[in-house]
Length: 469
Image (cartoon, rainbow, N blue to C red; front, side, top):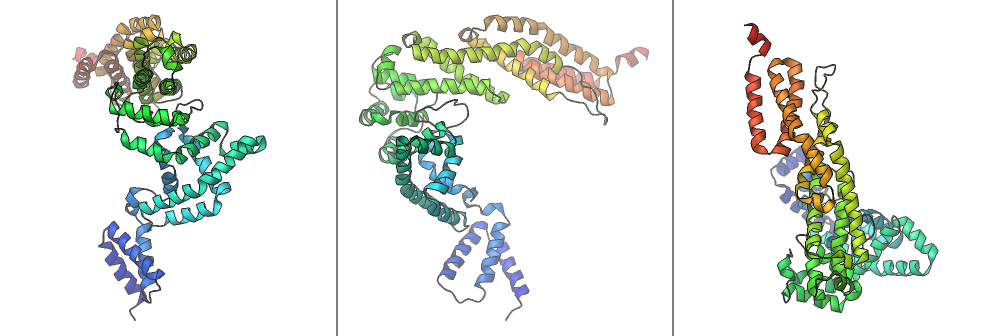
């Protein structure tokens, strides 16, 4: 019999010449052979070598997807287009908070169908389990768990103690309501999937014109399944390019652009979804977010509010008017605070940083980010100042920056030739911050001029030495 060590080396050399997919195919064949009772004396040795090859590389993850958690993702796939990310401050009927899913999964796996979930997860983690097999496992779990889940929710509705217990285990009342929406969506999959298949992947305002196929399809489903209107609206929301088109959809379905008639119609849920998006954008902008997220949220919020102001009179519906007024106050307060602090933040951002013990500049990244945020908001208010009632603070901030930013930047550039070594490195930090802010405020052409001035200043002789020479 060949030496085991030599045989192992030969197997490893053979596997090294195979592609990851070929090794996966071989592994699957070896697993099948062992399950059939193969008497090959080297089968286990080859199988172990294949498993080691699989574990040593990430490229063998099925379809580049980590095995851990893929069953959970497949399980939730039927509600993927109902999931909402950051920003929803409360429960919106039909929209399921993505953050609710992990605790719901834990509760289902521990208290609803523990044996079935444990077995399915063990199989889903195996290397040889294909994505389609994981999908089948998830489907079987759904079929088994949904009746049990329905029983648990029915008991929670009739017994306060059970209600409180389940709410605590899944993450609170909002998560419990998300769970109820999830059950409704899964049990309504037949007609919801038919709706999904009948609609374009992306819906625009043209798809909501009177008589359009998408409008007729949505109306037919709403008229037939009006008790699940929030789920239908959530599916449609997931496909619209911009949420303000949901107001056009509501008007077309209601036969009127009057807010009063839209609110009283059985199709008001679509407008509700648009307003929930305004609230979500407002919450993101007013929360602890990056400047990029702030910009995206403000763009979406201002576009939506501009559409409302131009085409609809919210005074006809006190409830909707009040909801949007709350978001306006929140965003206006955010902008006012940021613009009041903008001039001071910009001054701090343009200070030449001090050097640390290693001779490196101590860059105040917070001051630079806050200055950039002020510039960002100032730019956004070119078109949105009226609707947010921040005209005065916007004009005052612009007046303060029009000259001070340019003067400070020119002063930094003028002093640049007289710097050297570590001092120059620190000075360049302030110069580059100034050019970046000028680009945000004055535009790219002006910033490019400043960059040419920066290059010339670096090449120039120090003024003091040039004068003495």
